[in-house]
Image (tube, rainbow, N blue to C red; front, side, top):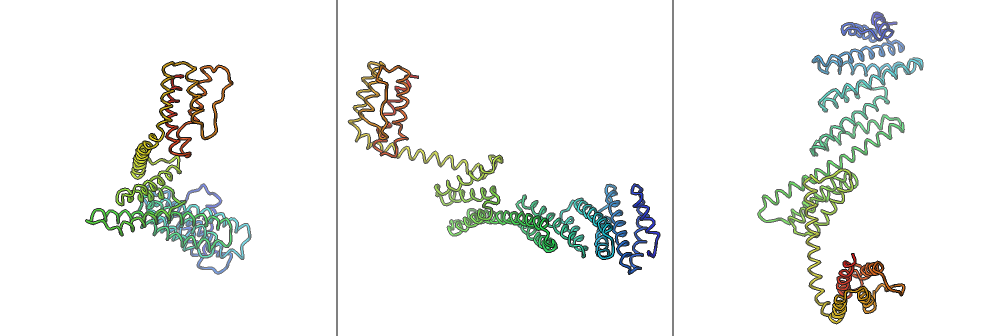
Length: 444
């Protein structure tokens, strides 16, 4: 059936004795015999068998070429033979689909799968990612008949483009990253088209497409943030007078960067949010808004624990501002309250004089009974607004019980617990708590 049975004999010897290593020249001689046989027959069975033999021979030569790469050989020879191996495996599938037995077709499928596995590993040997992608595209185009294998190569191609895009994304080279993410969509769509309804393939494609979309959003976010950074730099450094319209355009870029990564890439959302804080703090001088954005960026950063950002500029800036802002606000509130409470101290002059008098009397005697009397005076004269009362067993109170009663009284009259009742009462509670605290400390 073969025009040249010499190649078949050599191939059969090789398959029977797989440990035997043929020299490259002998393998090429075998391949030439199969190629002559393939082009001299029209019989479907012969075409199928010969195509398979050509594929296996090319596959063997390609792997042999890869082994010699450490001796300084490049990938060109291996690429050529891997390409022919895939081409003729694909043709063997087509020729044999209707004429060859199931066992033969199963064996062919196994060999084809192993060859494609070697093809993918071979492509990964290429240091240049662009050449790696180019090689996979070559293999994808030579498969014309077997959609399953074409689908697998399309997915692998999309994954390789995606990996290269992620490399540029890590470098924040958003232009190249965006270009490559968009380039992923063609092989992804081809994989979906060739999947033939196979749910396992379609699920893998959906996951890959979702990853590509998320990476694309990240790249778009970086682009928006960088555009905002550049516009802000030009405005601050080159504009003698601050253009408020341009500043709001900067804010729009940062807000767009946030929207593109919200619930997708928390770190990038945090960075863009901190940028908004910087504009409001340094340019617009609206500290309240700046604090809101800085605080939000810190919360986002903490949400990705255990990853930390303590050594990163944007996080340090946000943390420093929030700490300073909170201290200033606390001081302002304290100053305002001290000024306001002066009015209430005047209004409470009689009550405070009563307190001072009985407290002075208590200090003169310095007895447990005086401390008890002082406590009863406070509860009787200034009843708690919460309805709490002094409760004793009616007998002589020991030091331990008296200490506990003072501790409870401090809770009842604590200023923070009485803020909502009224400022005048709050002021009175501050003064009562000071006196109660002094007595309680003497019992420690």
